[in-house]
Image (cartoon, rainbow, N blue to C red; front, top):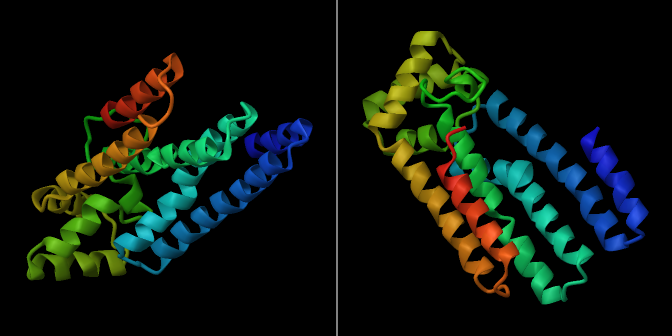
Length: 209
């Protein structure tokens, strides 16, 4: 509904570039969801595939918003591209969201391990499966491939991810995207708006839900 409403509003602008961005966004969001379902169904455990999914699901959404904002303000093309690049902060947002799934004490409105329960293997667990001891990895791969997601197995997968540096690795990747976004933002003219976007970038890193 929200996307359809956005498309209607984009048409009202009469700007074909904005209409094109919103139309492509609808396709990208759908492709991201479908890719995530396929990945879960086929138990594809690949970081590159994971990053492709969150690009379609979240990074493209924020990039489209920041790009449209620049276009609607009649910014020059060079500035439009920088604003779109800043929107890749969406990677950071999604990785943070995925980290929440590994902590029971987080009040995020969904049960801990919900992603795993749905067969979605996110970055902390992907890293642990890449770096953990072979015997443990093989045991947990069996659980994932057989989709044996009992409460006990989900708790064990979460602890396995934590014990093998999965959270720290995900936080490191998240900071990489945060720092890239801030670097782009600092190339924009100094203003209250830029300070607000800097605060937004920091909030995405530090948010607790």
